[in-house]
Length: 144
Image (tube, rainbow, N blue to C red; front, side, top):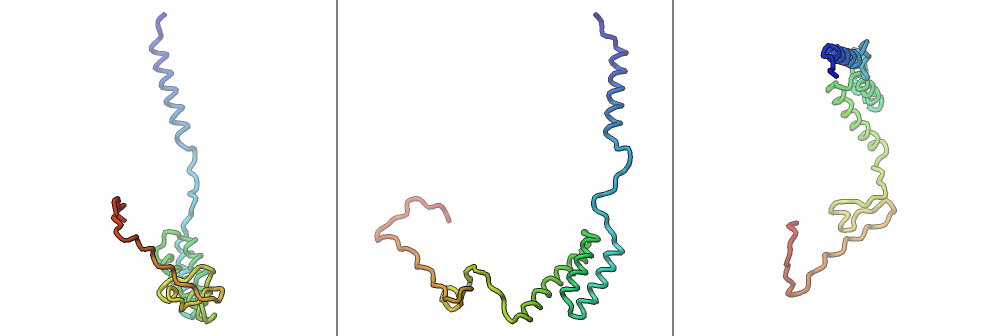
């Protein structure tokens, strides 16, 4: 039995046509993220005014809205980062000190026991490293 060539060609053309029809969307969909550059510029202006007045937490909120409006804006991200740092510094200035978590303190004062931990007791210095016995020879070194 002989397979008709015309039928095979038409079947192939129909399959390709159906594949292209399914691959190309019927209508263009809206992108997941919409950039609103004018809204971003507006929030940057409000944030700069608040920042210049020393209202760093307000400025941070304005710059955050600017970043939401246009996540690709380098200017909005730079102002937001700056406002976050100034807001934290302002909070420390108002509180008079930094709140320390229960984590041990690092640095030379912690090693000498001069700094106090969050519990109010001095942290003990770390124990000295163990000395190898006399006459010990290192056979295999990891290179650390």
